[in-house]
Structures are given as C-alpha cells and as structure tokens.
Amino acid sequence: MNSYEEKFNKAIQNTFFSKLSDGDQQFIQNKAYELKFSHQELKQIIDIARDLELWNEGNIQDIFPDHEQKKVVFSRLKRAYETLRDKPNSYENFTLKNIPQEQKFTFTSKPKEGFGLGLCPVASEKTRCCNLLTLDAVESCGFDCSYCSIQSFYNQNNVTFDSNFHEKLKNLNLDPNKTYHIGTGQSSDSLMWGNREGLLDSLFEFARNNPNVILEFKTKSDNISYFLENDVPKNILCTWSLNTQTIIDNEEHLTASLEKRINAARKVADKGVKVGFHFHPIVEYVGYLGEYEEVYKKLLETFTPKEVALVSFGTLTFIKPVIKQLRSRDFRTKITQIPHEDASGKTSYPYETKVEMFKHAYESFAPWQSGEDKVFFYLCMEPHELWKDTFGYQYSTNNDFEHAMLGAYCKKVGQDYLI
Image (cartoon, rainbow, N blue to C red):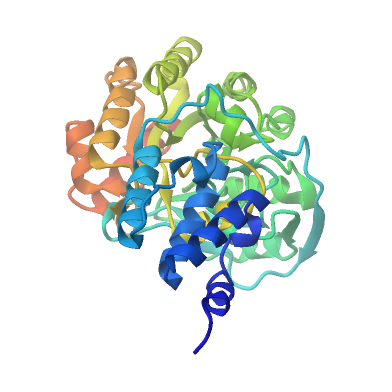
C-alpha cells in the first residue's frame, strides 16, 4: 500500500502548491500528514491558500481551524474562506505585486485561418445578446486587466497581426441592403496598436466602402491620433470602456487613466464622431456606488446626449480557465474575491447585487434617456429577466434587442436602418 507521503506528492501535482509561500507549503503538508486529507480536499485547500495570497488577505494559517476531526476542519475552513470571499471588497489596504510599468512585446504578422468575421465569442442562449459580429485583426492585448478572458486564450507578450486582414475585408460579401453592427475589440484593444500594419487604414476603408456597417472601435487607451488626423466615416463609433480610478489603479494595469480616457473621448466627439461608454465590469467594493456615480456625473457634464450613441453595463463573469490563469500568476488581485453564483454556466455576482449595480447606473443616466437625442442603453450578456428589474423593460428575443440597437445607432449617425 502506498504511504500517505506518496499520496500527498501525487495529489499536489497539477495544483498551485508550488506557487504558495514556503510557509504555506510546509503548513499544508504538516496538516495533511496529520489529518490525511483526500486528493480533492487537498486541491481545494491549496486553491484556498492561493486565493488568500492573491487577494492580499493573509495566509491559510490565519483561518485554519484547530480541531482533531478532518471533516470538521475542512468544513470550517471552507466556511471561513467563503465568508472572507463573499464580504464586500476593500482596496484600502490592498497592495499590488509584480505589476510591470510597461510590457515588452514580440510582434508577428502572419496569415490567420478563418474569414475574419465571427460571432460574439461570449454569446449564450441563456442571456440577452445583441448579435454583435466581430472582426479580429490582432490577437492578444497589451493591457493587463486582471479580469480579462483574453489572457486565457493568448500569449500576452506575443502580439499577432493577420497579414491577410486587408484582403479579407475587401472580400467580405455583405448584403448591401442590410445593416450590420461589427466590433473590433474582442481579441485585443481596438486602438492601442494605432495604425500598425496598416490596421486602421484597412478598417476606415472598409467603413467607407460599406456604409451599411456600423463599425465600433472599443478601447481603454487614449491613442486617438489617427482619428484626429484623418477623416472619420460617419458610420464609425468610438467607444471607451470606463471604470472607477480605484479599479483602474488596482485591476486595469497599463491602461489609460479615467481622466485620459474621458479627455480622449471628448476630443473624438469634437471631431464629430459619435462616442459611447461601456461600464463593464462594474465591480462591487466598499463605497463603489458612490465612486461610480461620480464617473456617471462626469460624463453627463462632459457630453451631450446628441454626441453619445450608447452606454452599456455589465459585470464580472468568470469561466474556469480564467480563474485558473489568475491563480497561476505571481501578482495580486481582488477580482475573484466575490460571491460566486452560477450565471449561465459561468460564475458571477448574486442576482440581487446585479440589480443594485445596474439599476443605480441606469437611474444615474436619467437625463440621457428621453428626447430626440436619447442614448441607447443596454446590459451586456445578462439574463433576460434582469432587464425588467433594472431598466423597467426587456426585449422578448435577441433579434428584438438587435433591431432596437441598430435602429438607435443608425438614427444617431444619420443613416437609414436596413432590415
């Protein structure tokens, strides 16, 4: 029969045991030998210890129960962990770790398989989706947002441009009698690379040649020089993902500050380009509603509804590969320190928390919700019923949602909506 030492050494393989501090490793090993934890129990204990380190919430020794029965110890440990995880976050005493001031990239340009035009990668039958199409010319993002799923799919330091992108755009066979909404910021930030590899040249030409396409650039940068130096087709929307400075400082590493993003949006709007704002993710932490409200007020003061095409709201949702990727990194984040409830096969905040954050956000923008120049508001990838509880209305189908969105965008940019 194998000794427990052999079982232990086998159990910690393919876990984050080696990522733990020497003190935590020794503590877990001693307790495992004493209490004879199973393979699955050990894995969960290691994950708990890793999360505490990530969250800057001390170590597992601080919350480990003192009891001689294994079942009691494991149950109390999980309860203590969940209590710590589910409480409202505070960044007041949070300290960052190993955050680079800049990233160094290896740039590659090569043909990419596929046609280039795809469906929104997070579309789901269980959530209300706008049927967005995506154009991905670049793989990997130079920003380092802790919550972003891009990091689980690509090597962050290797940025790949599709060398056939220009030709693919020219060969796209779109129905000229139909309006399309196409986004460019799914597998990378839309503007951070500027016109490298002629990327923006190709996209602007595509927009000019296809006036029935609403082409959206989504960014967390302030790299707008190309927009300011060139004529921008009216069917282009330039949108910014915004957050509180607390979240930008602690979770959206290497991105432009809130002030720089808003100033960049103001300059683009002054050029006559319609802009938009995505609050995704809204993150719950101590005092978060007040901080977000200050951002909402700043936008209301800085822009008129005539200049703004859209405002969207969303929050944190996690798939297992992203959580695994976060645990593998040698840094700190509180982004997974949330109550995890099932959300269409992913994990997210409880329903009541979402109602609180989205209803507060929507009501804060009341001045932009009526009149000839009203702004289009929507929830991104949230359950159908959540719309009714936050906005006071909901769409029966994804197609109804898409039609309402496209109709609003076309009206805003001054072109006909082709169904």
